Image (cartoon, rainbow, N blue to C red):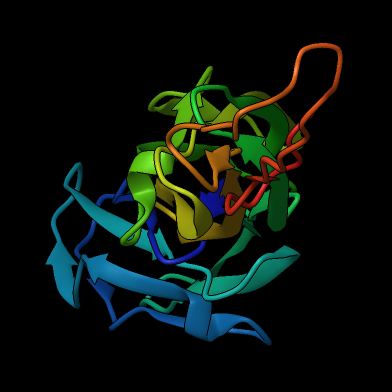
Amino acid sequence: GDVRTGSSERRSLAVTNDGNATLEVDPSSISGSDADAFTIVSGEQTSLAPGETETYSVAFGPDEEAEGYSATFELTSNDRNLSVPLAGDGIAGNASLSPSTRDFGSVQLGSSREQTFTFANDGTAQLEITSVSVTGDDASAFSVSGLSTGTVDADGSKNFNVTSSPSVTGSATATLEIGTAQAGTTTASLGVTGVEQDIELDTESLAFDRTRLGTTTITTLTISNPGNAPLN
């Protein structure tokens, strides 16, 4: 059957003496091209009186994702030799995040911008999401919605949103981290630039010289924008 890489499952087989004399069973063994993936975890050399049974337990623990692991469980005795085919498939989850990097561009302070991300399991086994977080010095500029802990089926995916709401001007970066029990942590890099206009006048008041009636006096007032966003 299907067994996740890095883990194992056991199956049992029973040897019974249906005869009328003692059955001498030699040590069991496993042979074949994939013998290393199978282990005898219980059952040993023994003598079985008529009607007695010895149970053998064999574990399958694949070390990589692949189909068609095969080997043979072999048992010799003073009656006859027994061979039992062993088979299994190694399966694994494969986590990915798309996009793996996202620049939210310039975002006005006091507003926000939302982007859609996809967490995908391209493998052959379920993945269990154990944590969803944003880390880094500027983590507070980003938030995640629509993704929580739980399972993602093989060849399955989940869409979710990341929102950027910068609180200070200038660039901000952080890392989106999705932790799984089977495939470790998958990350995406996040970036945004907080922008804000800043209107300034070159004077706090204007004083005009004495002006004759019927004439006009002109003075200059300068408006500047030392901020990092256009001032309209």
